[in-house]
Length: 370
Image 1: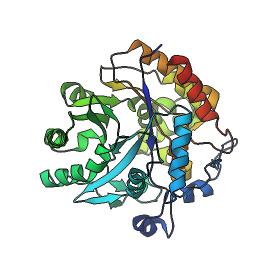
Image 2: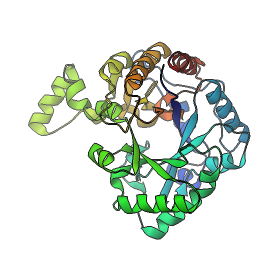
Image 3: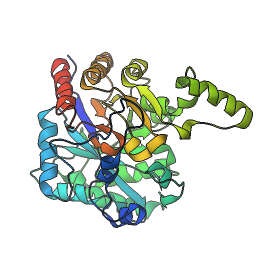
């Protein structure tokens, strides 16, 4: 039996039109645009991956977030981690769903934020060009204060996730903040000034040594096990295939790679066997993912975990929870990537193939271990 662990899922607040997306992709664009037009790339490829019970929802409709909250709580999700986009100088994107949630007390699920501090480039978001769409900046003290003050009404909400009256605040790319300690100090000081004990910062992409040494950082989400498969795709996982052998020869002679000319495909079951959860330090927080297929967004440049299904997802959860049981001193969270990143084929919400089974598998494992 594991001590009380809170299951938190990343939440994408994208599913509503905004002027920037209209400009970049066309009038009325949301992630559903890509989801609906996805095509199979090989025999047996499950695409399009389509939503079931909640449908192609619009987050401007209040009932949608209420239904998501009810569904998540019913099946064992204890909170959402809203991606929050603050690009500096007060510039935000996709902030409206969280603002609506704050006002709507019918949305019961607890929440916290992940500052998604990353420059948006077209090549990462489905466009066939490397141009910067919007740049992440770090203007300094006044901007950090303005950012905190914008977030303060959320922090004061009774649903905001705290540990020992410290605000849990995730940062996607911790290493990118040029004046990191200064930023952390400002948020801590402002939190204490407003009646909290401070802030527990949780890193996602970050240097482990920085995380270990910095006492202000509470946790480190273990996305590294997931990303290791993305960044080693050319050499480690393709090496035994025909394409891998051709690629090695081309790369050796002409410095040419085939990575961007065909999808990177892994069997989910094999991937889960390779993903050994490794609690590398006492701040490590395990992260699990039920599925992944971003071909709706990336096309032939996609990474695809084929043959994912709720039964193997259940095995992934079982192995991870066993490791959490052995590392009871680590932060009391399990992170699920993700609740609703549909264009990346990464979701827990019901779909037309498996219905509620992704959620049912999670609840079954949670009930067994907790």
